[in-house]
Length: 247
Ligand code: PEP
Picture 1 (cartoon, rainbow, N blue to C red):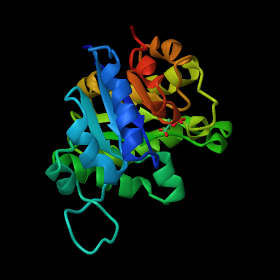
Picture 2 (picture 1 turned 120 degrees about the vertical axis):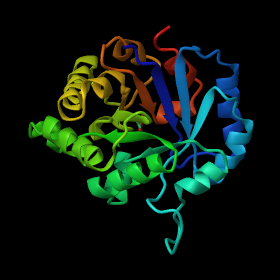
Picture 3 (picture 1 turned 135 degrees about the vertical axis):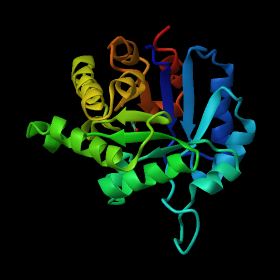
Picture 4 (picture 1 turned 90 degrees about the vertical axis):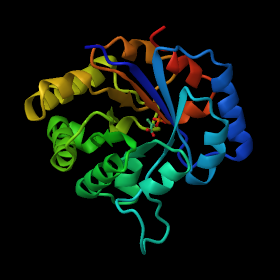
C-alpha cells in the first residue's frame, strides 16, 4: 500500500500579510511535485487571508485548536470556527505546545479526537526530549504519546503522525536518516500491534526536526519516512526543495 508523501510547513509565530504573500508566491512558483501533499500551518489571524489566496493543492492548517465547540474559553479557537472559514487541517500536540504551554498527552488526545469528530484532518506531533533519548526512553515516550491518542480516537484515516524529536527542533541538529527511520519503524509496528495492520500500512508518519534542502533527500529515502514537518526552512524558498525531496 503506497502512502502519498506529505510535507507540512509550520510557520509558528511568524509572518505578516506581506511575508505570507511571499511564502505563498514561492509555493505557487514551485514547481511542486504533484505527487506530494503540501500543508502550511499559519497563525490564526492570517488563516482566512492565506486560505483565500492559496491554490487548492496547498492545504492551509491552524497550529492549534481547542476541544470544545464554544464557551467561556478566552483566547481559544474551535474546530467549527476553522471549518467555518474553510480550514480543513490542524497541527496538534507540537512540542512547543507541550513544553511552553504545558499541554498534556491527555489534553492533546482530547483535542485530536474533537478535531477529527468535527471533520478536520490532523497532523499529530509526538517526540522525545534529549534527556529522554539519552536515558534510553525514546521508544517508551513515543509509545506513551501515541497510546494517549489511540485511546481517544476511533478512526486514523485523517491523521498524519509527525515524529519530531524535541532535541532536533529548531536546533540545527537533525536526526540522522537511521535514527529517524528507527523510530518511524517502531511507530509503524506499534500501530500494527495496537491498532491494526491497515492503519499501520496507510498512516503517514512524517519526520520533523531541522529538515533543510540539504538533508531532506537522504531522510526521504528511508522506507518509513513519509514526509516532513518543517519549521524554520518553511519560511525560506528552500521549502520548495523539501517538498520535492523525492524527485
Ligand atoms: C517544527 O517546529 O515542527 C520543526 C520541525 O522546526 P524546525 O524545522 O525549525 O526544526
